[in-house]
Image (spheres, rainbow, N blue to C red):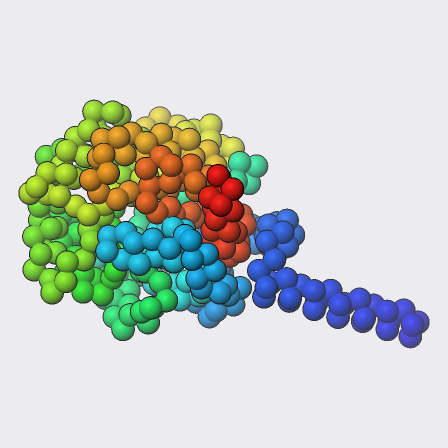
Length: 379
């Protein structure tokens, strides 16, 4: 019995050391093929898993990667220096709690938010659903946020200075009587602190939000946002994040306003999540919603692999319309270097990912950058 016990103890110790080393070093296959699938079995609720990930990242309990590993990928966009084009999209670090750990994991930039002026709980839980077979996620969070003041306290000292780029994604409160005023307040609150600001008018989970993308409403919004920015001591870049569900005429209208001399912004992010169909919602457990039938119900925003083609097509169209006049950030369905390079070739200057972080873990940033570097060197 003593020999069996000793053998089990040695095996347990060896397994523990192997697991610790794989986690600390950021072993890509270990995270994707063993650790995260096991974690999904143990933590079934998507939001609980998300909150745990934010907690671990906020205390630095994720792999660290050396900066400047790929000097050939360095770029300057919006007047800002990026180690490489790969960033983490808004939605993961909603409240500015984990950005330092995430930068250390290998992302060149982190987009904090979406942040609303006043704290709000967002929509009822459950509201994050994994569609594992498609490497996709459906969320209907509804801008849950700690609010401007709490997030500002975490950002005000700019602890990331010299270690990466931090943007702040701005939204409006669900019950706001004047959404435009909410965005103006966000510019005034974070304009002196953030490296860039994003006007998010494209989430499908806040009623009426996407109507702010219509031509005249967008013109009014951007004119007031830019007026507020121009009163700051620095000209913080203002970006607009749009939906992938806009038709060609709407895209033309959006670009016309974005390039107009009176409402000219500094860049665009293409794109946000796409509206989830009833069939997609059923596949990942996001439908039916209690108390609703399937007519005229927003089941949430779909991200991940199923969004790649749609978002890239939208990016390509916007690139053709802007003709290089302003930089674009490509978002949606990126899980490897080839995907990221497709976005760059479609007109993006930078790319962001999120859902692949859910399925591949922290090593994904370094992995995608390495794969882009290899593809560029061999092309």
